[in-house]
Image (cartoon, rainbow, N blue to C red; front, side):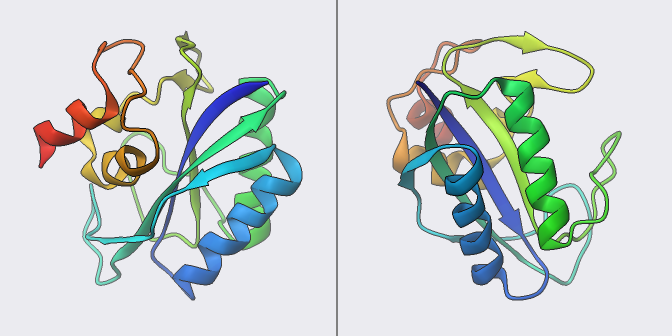
Length: 154
């Protein structure tokens, strides 16, 4: 079994319900959710919106490959109502966003998926909930703990 970490965010509709439904579907289709952070209210990042986000992080034990996880998280997003993913740094409001942040200590560069998530160390809204549930996990590229990365942005 592999320990993975997912980042979740929503800024439309019933935000708490969106996150809870996403976590339920992750448990059903990806693996056992072994840790779930509190839900954090945050301002939009990378675009202007009147809708604040609710963000969380989840630790999951899974036997799936990174690409299987990507496929399943995208399917979950679509089922919850997300119509399109952000591309080329163009972000917009969304019912749900599920990002694969870490897949153990795997490093991967592919046109469909990069591990660890390439922007996670720049995003307080990712690191804060992740630091709550995985403070001592080491970023496989930056060789710093999640806590250390979060403290830089605090």
